[in-house]
Length: 195
Image 1 (cartoon, rainbow, N blue to C red):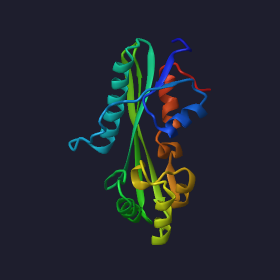
Image 2: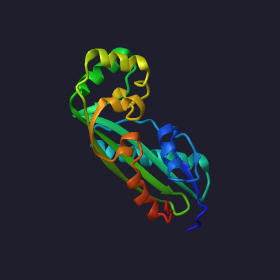
Image 3: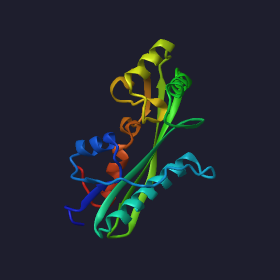
């Protein structure tokens, strides 16, 4: 395979962009128009894999390029049920209160798709996170800080969100939205070497 193969990240996530930049990959960004809808007949693991694959295929159709390697991902935060993004301060408070002192799981589906070979791989990675016991006034201050919006679980593990985390079991970059170790293994299968 050509070492200069064009790589496209099918995401506008600043964290995913930052992760790929830290790996030293040269890549472009494309936005997927896939509706991130959960299929109730599939497991959470199957859902993140399916949505990541759908994003990769959507971007492939948009680009109409016959030689691109697309990287797509989808992340869900689970604590028995799916925890989404808050739309109000009260929802953010309720989510953080629910997570306080407990373990939740972050599952990221990753897809790497080669348009020339019309071949893709997809899988997922899980990370368990335990929150510290959060006091009500701390939760309110964190919400006022503004780091709860556009974040599943009403927090980001980077920045001040790290104050919420007592323990991590698994891949830290998975909690950011793109598991580097897993992605590296997948890229090798497409003759893309990070090191």
